[in-house]
Image 1: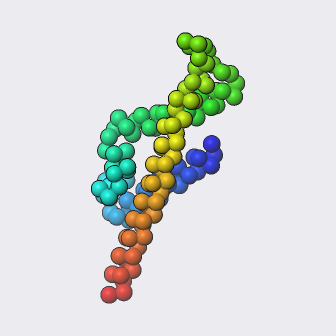
Image 2: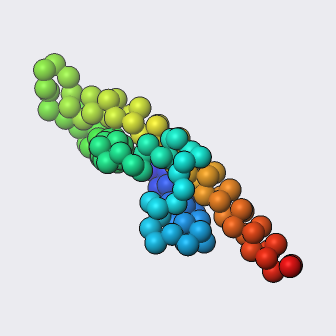
Image 3: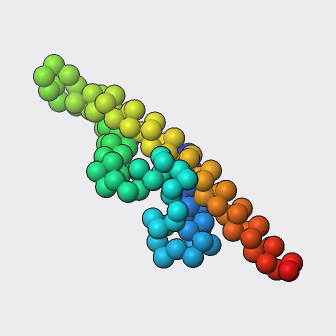
Length: 121
């Protein structure tokens, strides 16, 4: 999980930095119109909550699986079932994190190029 958290935090940090360079007062105020994935992720609170909750539930279930399969609920082990059901959400959130990283890196490059062009003229 440490590599995952480092990537997510790094991606979010670069996104925050890019929004700061662009002059936004919040990392959620940057122009998301060019990226429909990030636009939908940040503008729909239900999606954002579901992705964050599902991601955290996945890792919590993995942790709990280290100690037990969990109580039997309807013939299924609760912790294992939770991990299996939330695994696709974790994968999607990982993809979104990479998309965010790439988009933010491009935005920093654009702002940096514009600043260098202004300094030359």
